[in-house]
Length: 303
Image (tube, rainbow, N blue to C red; front, side, top):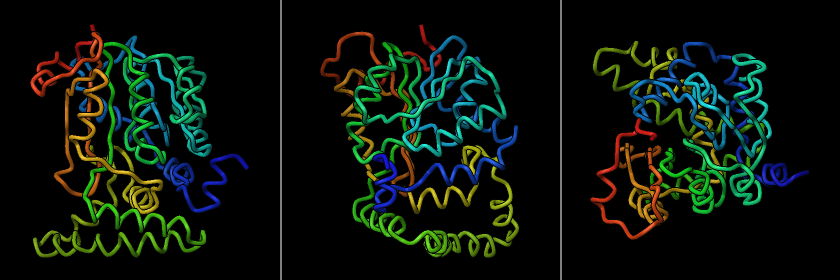
């Protein structure tokens, strides 16, 4: 067994790729369009294109957002540590972009410095909800930052630090991964089903009970990033390793490495990810004030 298989066998890692394989069957053009729109919104693409730009997808998962970047005409490199996720990404390419020379897919780890150094640099480095699952988030973030070309963009989403509540979720996630296979989904349903009831009761009290049903049936709203509700549930309950960070910690960490904050979308202090877009300065890193990070050019200025 390789390191990944050992970690899974010891209950130290969630098999994200197996979850994505179950999701993959439901991917259609509508979900692809949602993913494309998500990237356009996040990066504030005025012309809606990444033509001629190099796009790196760290932890490609299902491959949906790699495909979206390719639809936006970027040259795409995707990699993932989970072999099942690599298979998913390759299947996504086979179905939607067969024999496309502009999309390269590999297996690799963002924690493997030798592998990372072999990749070169990219105009857009994208890692949504991945770095906090590596087991060494700050090293992963540092390595990801090294892959960004001067004036390039680093786009990340990292779990919000909620203090004691985050520690409770870490315990739930550890428990999930140590359970026998047959009990994991039952445990996930118990954990998330109880939380989901409040949405049902809220819709009933507002006189709109069908809204709850529609949220389960319609996965294509932008907020879901094209992913299904059930697969998001399992991803959340099982997602381990699990680390968190306050927005200001991410800001300070990358400011010291010569990055300027371009966009920040928080989860309002609750469960979920804070989303960041940083631009790498084309001058050497230096101490920067808060105001330095708020006067950068628009996101669609790649010149």
